[in-house]
Image (cartoon, rainbow, N blue to C red; front, side, top):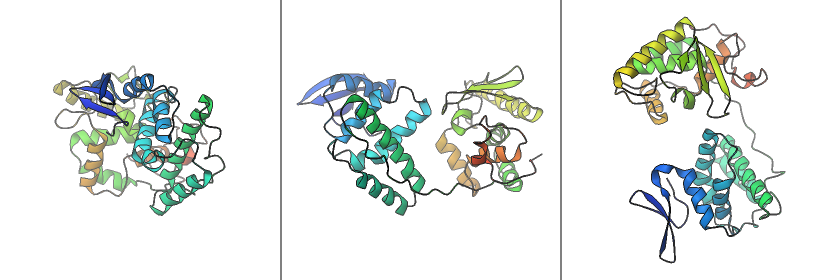
Length: 301
């Protein structure tokens, strides 16, 4: 993880170092949000650069966002935006710079990702305007990259082939992802008691909304099989690997790569919406068009 300027890690704590003076901030196990909040209180001067504005935004501008969205924004800021714009004076960014950035991301083969990063940069400037630090948002009026909606549909044969070649713990993960339409970030965090009273009830990390999914016979079978394995491992999460550890995003990606499939884990969410006669994703009906990738598909039995 890239630390903010002048922040150093030592003996399990973060410190702000200025003119050889070390000022304690937070413990490393308190997380990145606590670090940025503590950093804000000792650097209260108005930001002079966009990098400093980004630090203020991370500390105080994301309070109303869901946890998963905060993590995503942090990744985009520290992954690309800080490198591209952090050195610039706070009032020097122009629409032409933003347009050029979007064009670069399109040439790199990531037009949609560039649009997401532009949206974050816009949010940062809106925050700066509310604080009285910037007068305008240079992202306004800049045309977004054209995006092609993802049309990849996982066929029944493709799904069953991957399912049958997977170890049992990964089978449970694949099955429950498909049968419930849950996002990867949510299903990985399901606890042992997530299924109770005939429903799977949880709060979506991306939206903060509560969801309930009926426990059908098929869902119940995989829940109980996963629960027995998790209890034997003495863990708190429902879905664990063969070592009894919770699945990570990297581990899921690696498993799919070993299987040699030509689809992403998130495509199972689209398959769930496409195959189901019901709105299993918890979206408004108009949002289902984003996920449905064929008019009518026979469900997997």
